[in-house]
Amino acid sequence: MPDESAPSSPLLPYEGRTIALVGLMGAGKSTVGRRLAEKLGREFYDSDTEIEKAAGLSISEIFARHGEADFRRGEKQVLRRLLELPPHVLATGGGAYIDAETRALMKEKAVTVWLNADLETLWRRVQKRDNRPLLKRADAKAHLSHLVTEREPYYSQADLHVHSKDGPHTNTVAAILKALQTWTPE
Ligand code: S3P
Image (cartoon, rainbow, N blue to C red):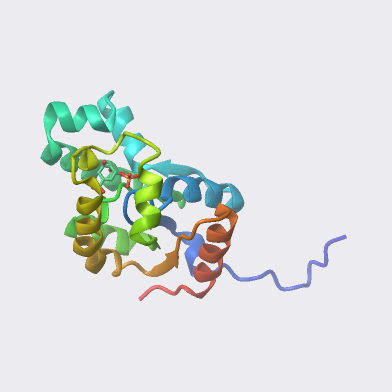
């Protein structure tokens, strides 16, 4: 018989919020996000997948046919919609958090976690797939390095910072869960 007089543990602040993963391509947002969602028994959404579903086109096709500006407009709309859903785990596309309005909305509605990884790790991971239009160029690694520098001031505004190291994803999931315990809204 459960002891009904025992005090139930109070909800931690993050439990009422969507957990949004931000960071560069190759940081592991989708893979880690999916595992984090499983662990927490939450739904998992990936903003890139939602954009693809809405457009009926892959990200590469959207960039090729409509251009980056159109993609960014769609990305913003999709994130606005996803952030209205009940608390879930959300992997965001690498550029989403760079937009000031999206950043502000995520601050209001979610706990944001920057999945940070060093350039060599990012580069090794992004080479496994050919689905990133921003890296379809001869100087792709140099461009990725440029994005690391350019975007760091934005990603560092996330509520929590977790290093995404090589090795089992369960380690990164555990590091996120630990960081979440400490989070309080500003
Ligand atoms: C982008 C990252 C991609 C995707 C698009 C643009 C970016 O998502 O949204 O190719 O600007 O960094 P991932 O970070 O999931 O690769």
